[in-house]
Amino acid sequence: MIATTITMLIALGLYGFSQGITGSWIQMIAKRDILNERLALDRAVDGVLCNIVPFVWRDADGQEFPFIVGDINGLRAAYLHPLHDTEEGALRFAEFIVESDALWLKYADRPFFDWEDVGDRFAIVKLADGVDSIEFRYADWSDDSDSDWGDRLLWLEEWETTDSERMDAPLAVAMTIHWLDGTDTCYLRRTMGNSYRERYGKWEPLSEDKR
Image (cartoon, rainbow, N blue to C red; front, side):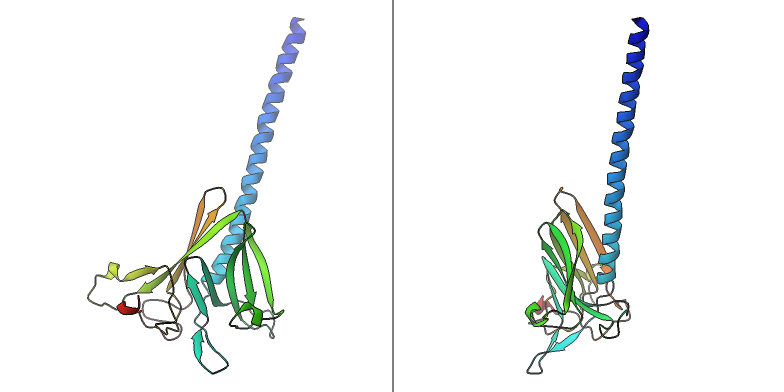
């Protein structure tokens, strides 16, 4: 009886030990999968935000307007991407969308006014699951040269172009993803060709009366 009891205790110990190892392994695999998903998301977001460029489009009357719509809840912009198809070109016109608890990137290879204008020339890819909402902030530079250097960088909740008639892109974009589990992930990226002394395309600071 004593030997049987000892054997059962050893067996129970080994079972508990194996269960602990199995549970730790399952948690490690789950965290690894999440990390891989976040790394893939990081590459996708980086590929868009770092390559945003100013792009001017014309309507039927020949009126110019910038292909960028940026507010706190969403962003539509033109960005450069590798040339894989000469018919598709090296520009994409894309928008971040949250739908069905997932983050999507919808893009076309031609500029447009509304998505209805694109027809079937668009694609949509899922970037991540478990997303509650997204937020954007846009970096601008004050034209007040008398201000201290650190005070001239402005973070705006909207990239205003209609009233100001600006045709440029933000200096940088901050994108925050709010996950359903209550955590947040923030991506901060400088846009294409925007540095202290150089701009990709015409750039002018937004005046105080337009801000």
